[in-house]
Length: 167
Image 1 (cartoon, rainbow, N blue to C red):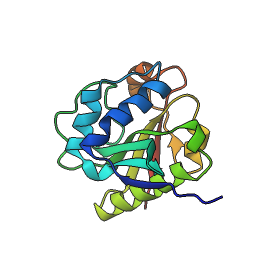
Image 2 (cartoon, rainbow, N blue to C red):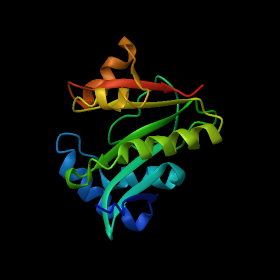
Image 3 (cartoon, helix red, strand yellow):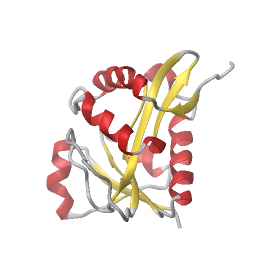
Image 4 (cartoon, one colour):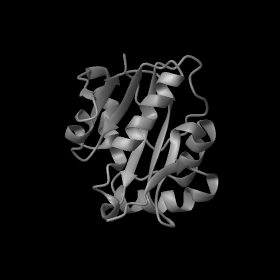
């Protein structure tokens, strides 16, 4: 089987597709299209689309952030930190029909390279839907921190804050 899938820069013109994918996958964690648009505008280098043939079948959105801090779900960031301690992976989605091609691993590898190029030595994310085992395969570990528990509740009962050290 020939795999023509690849990660490419996410463009503003792609946001309708991203929002359709997000709405289909994150039925209990909706975010407004403007929230995604802001992240793409603030940090385009961290935002990618997963393309197979002529179709967007996934996306990844990341941005610089403060370690051990969770950006509120469906809220505007307004600005990025001047001295970020991590690249925060806000969301990575690959549609079911496009899974099994190593898409998540390729996106994480890209974000790790981007972080190192930016002299950022950690990645962070909130794992949802019980995906913490997936993320642990890429070097992420669950961080138990009671200060984060309240913010995690908006991400669902299975949400876990995770960090990957790059040094």
